[in-house]
Each structure stands twice: as structure tokens, then as C-alpha cells.
Length: 168
Length: 168
DNA sequence: CTGTATTTTCAAAATATTTTGAAAGTTATC
DNA sequence: GATAACTTTCAAAATATTTTGAAAATACAG
Image (cartoon, rainbow over all chains, first blue to last red; front, side):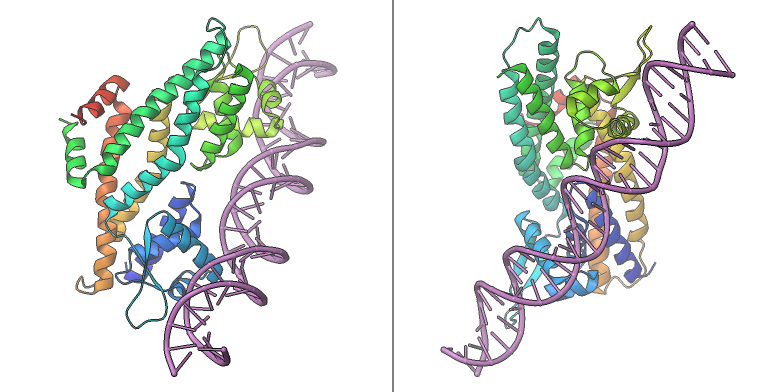
């Protein structure tokens, strides 16, 4: 397979992949494009490569910056802004985990804390089922939260080798 | 907080949570409703509780069954079909992981295998950047794949206690 | 300052997804 | 095998999301 075709396939499937994870196609494609480009690109480069409008590129680049996956690069002597993606995939994964944990897991856990204190007689099977479900989710969620914290702080080698040890 | 309000909140936030994970709101809400109900429910029960149409309930229930999260229950002497969700959260998580791994991770890994064999001189920095990115993702993806396999087979206690050990 | 290059914004248009509801299909009962 | 109870389907409508593009804002160079 030629590089051009391989790049296209990578970008397109990274885009499709993203949509399964609540990320819009263009955002995922821009990320993919920046990942496989050794040098930073401008908004115009991205518009041209992906055939999307300026506004679209601008908004999604901003979002990628919010996620901490892309950074603005200013090249000396150049007026335009360039953009470049973090290339170390372990860092990328950690950054995504960190953000989603903050945006989704943590708020969910604090809600569950409140919900577990629901009023009512635990001998009522509706109350019992509710509390059991909520506390089951909360317990597992708390564990996940801790494990992810560990992962976020970890070096790739340390984490992977610990995971591998579990297979022994 | 009263049970009624707590149930509402749980259902609504489980729905919002789902939308961040590529699951539609109604599907997540039906799942939530079944999780907190001690007894199985009919399509009509669900329609009434969530205020959604029959067709919508029917389609999303089917999807939940495909995901292995809900099962049809036939009560003796009853004509209607009842539905009930798996209540063990560890099993629920494993089931979701198993399905998403099959639907998303595995196809991605086989694509990456192909893409890594792209033609071209590795001294060309575009070729090099492409291969480096693809092989980085592939390597980490393969590791995730193995770890998830382990998790899918594991008992909750075994898995959690191994995770806890990492903290020592 | 002034003019120009560049970036940002955002209302409207395009597209995609979800929901509805009525009709068709199925299954059980008598 | 006719009727009634229930389930499934799916085209059309409603809703939500994404994209566009042109105007406004900003930044820079002379």
C-alpha cells in the first residue's frame, strides 16, 4: 500500500473510531492528520487535506487544544499559526483518560454518593434494589477512579510491565 | 431525597452519561430503569415510566439484548414479555468491555497491522512519522487487548485485589 | 495610524440521529 | 381458523449535531 492511501485510511478510520467515543468525525480526523505529520500544520493545510471549512477546522482545533492533545506552535518569522499533536501515544491516552475522568467519572461518583443516601425503608424491595444498584456502581467506580489515577501518574514501562505480571 | 426523585435522577444522569459513550439516551435510560427495578418490566411499563413510544422501546430493548445487558423473561401464565437487566455491575462492565473490544478494538488492530506495512523509504520523514505513529498505537492497543481479555475472564475479587496491589 | 493577513464567531444550512405511531406481523387462546 | 393480545417494522417527522461561510475581531508590519 502506498503512503497516500495508507494515510487516508488511517485518517478515515480514526474518524469513525472517534464517533463511537462521543467525538465528532472532523475532530478525530484532524487529530489523526496531526499525529501522522512530522511537522506542524496550518489551518489552511488542514482545510485542504480534509476538505472541511475554515470555521470547522478552527472550532475543532480549539477543542483538541482544550483536551490537551494539540498545541499551537509559532514558527519564527512566520505570521500564521501552526498546530502540532502530541506524538507519544501513552501520553495521549493518559491525557484522554485524565480529561474523561474529570468530566464524566468524577461527577457521576458524586451524584452516586448523594443517591445512595435515599430515604426509605430498606426492607422495601424497591428501595433495596435502588441502593444495591447505586452502591454497586459506586464501589466499582471508586476503584476505577483510583486505578486511573495510578495510570495517569505512571510511566508507560512501569504500567505495562505491571499489567504483564498479572498474566503470570 | 425521596426514592422517586432519586430514581429520576439516576435514570436521567445514566442517560446523559451514555451519550458520552456513543449510546443513545433512551437506550441508556431503559438500561438504568431496568437496573434499579427488582422485578422485570414490560414494554408498556417502560413506555409509561420514560414517556417514550412503543417503537422506540422495542428497538432499544432489542439493542440492549444484543449487547447482552438485558434478557427477555417469560413469566408463567403471562402473555406479555418481560425484560430484566443483569444486576451484577462487574458482569455488566465485563460484557460492555467484551462487546466494544470485539466491535472496535479488534478491527482497529487489524487495520493497523496492514497500515504498518506501508511501502516507502523509512528515511523519508513522512513515511517514518506514519509508521512510528501507527506502530505506537498498535503496540499499546495490543497490550490493552491482552489486559482486557484478562479482565473479561476474571472474577471481580481477583481483579480488584490485583489492582489494589499495584498501589503498594 | 492604516492596510493587510490571519483568526474567530455564529446564524443559517446541511446532515445525521432519534423518535413516533400506525400498519403489518406474530403468537396464543378458544 | 377467527379473534384478540401482543410485538415488530419502518417511513415520515421531530430533534440534535455538525458544517459552512461570510462578517467581525484581532494581530502584525510598515
